[in-house]
Length: 320
View 1 (tube, rainbow, N blue to C red):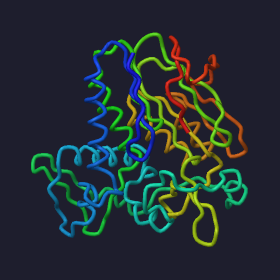
View 2: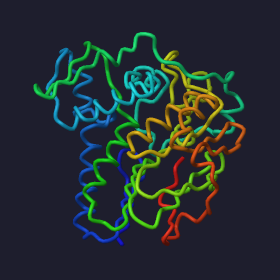
View 3: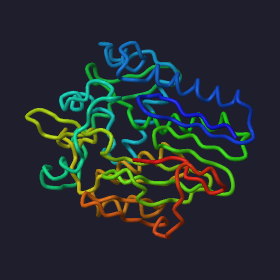
View 4: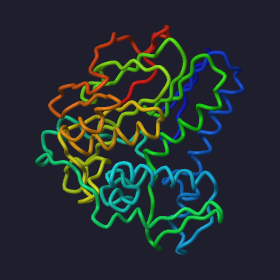
């Protein structure tokens, strides 16, 4: 069993595989490092940053950049505009201008207590992400000059989905991109969902072959202008942090990209909408009063196991 943990994309990542040689693990890690180098908005020399800085409406784009932007546009369409990749300016105005690895965080409990009235997020009226066009034949991306993109969370899901086939010979495998998980093998894994207020296990999901992702506030809450607490999950309709009554949403799906999209959509919808979003595949909602709600197929209770126990049913990643 190979089990490697490393930092990438400003987060902790983990590759676990049984039945493949170490070279497969190294290849998967190199892919994740390459995705980080070429798609990070925090690297001025990344291909994504160069796209955002280019004044031309149409820019040549590599297959990787086209895939990342395509995944972000798919998520926007799938979420009816809630997962919007065109909010980079709003994120920067909120203070999210650099990687927050090692940066001080505001206390989530205090942020919740001081948050404004809860409301579901909404899509931007102009749906400006629909103005972005990918031309695979011409190997280019076209968008209105000045429209900048942040592929953010969808890139983590895409990365997990891209790395998993490199470990396809494994009897059991885990690709954990900061809580966006692709898993495969039997027996099934127990995936521990951490509680964002305490860091303790909130519940456990049993997953065989498929994906799990969590969208939540715990790791990116900081002090903004005027001392108010802000976070990175924005309401596209207002450009402000979304306070919907949920602080975490976990989704299961066949792919990590879909699970990531469902989880973020659920959190932005608020409790009532989230139940509809996660009702088919199942998931977990954590409300800002600390209560934990299992939804859909996930409503069936399963045994909780410790994250560090590598046994037939193993909690492979803590999502927060």
